[in-house]
Length: 309
Image 1 (cartoon, rainbow, N blue to C red):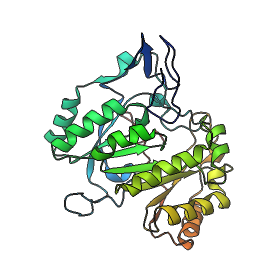
Image 2: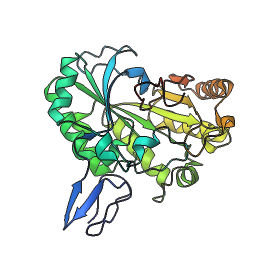
Image 3: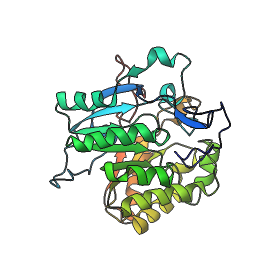
Image 4: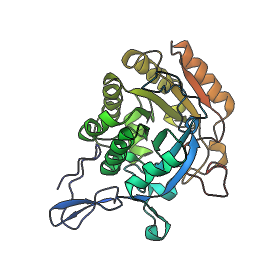
């Protein structure tokens, strides 16, 4: 069977799972193995995703960056990034049944309403691998006058994107590296190579914006790696301006050593972020933001300020 959740479009044999290990072919039916299984359900500010320009679709009023979201995530990912900040949930832990938070989808909506939270955020692990759960929660959210934001690496399939577009209010997409260097970076750093990878992800981003959805972008700058070179920043800035518009928000974020890239020397200097923010602004982009603190979109333990600490 072919899975259509993300751009990998895995061909999955009977009793086998796809790359992300969350979807299995059982006698000719494809099952989502972790439906209703959450790695975290947390109250977090909108700025931690980050969203800084999201307006209420009903009133067009700009949300404060400290507006609270009910942030939810599952397990698994279709990337294997060397510097993953959320590796404890981007991979499937062996004792997942003991760690997971089990909720019905209606209970997610009820919790948001009980806490008077207006926004549900799909975040931490990659939502592209769980279209059924995203779709059903987003439908329930819309029916209950709640808004939804979707934090993604941009690799969802067009079938998946068309399915959820009517029910998601805003998207925050990663651009891992610029158009001229991206394919090599996606292959070597993310273990994601589907042929013309960058073009397909950028096409998803452009398509989302053209459908009238609010889009914000994020690129993590890692010293010595493609995203942090001038050529990558310049080509990405040019692509954003020409395809999405100069007003499109772009967050240039600091990298904190993690997972396989845990060398302290890889922590991004503040001066590098500030330099490339100015460079992108010089290209005509109006809403470029540097992310210098530890408020990245990482799943946190109860006693930890951030997994980037």
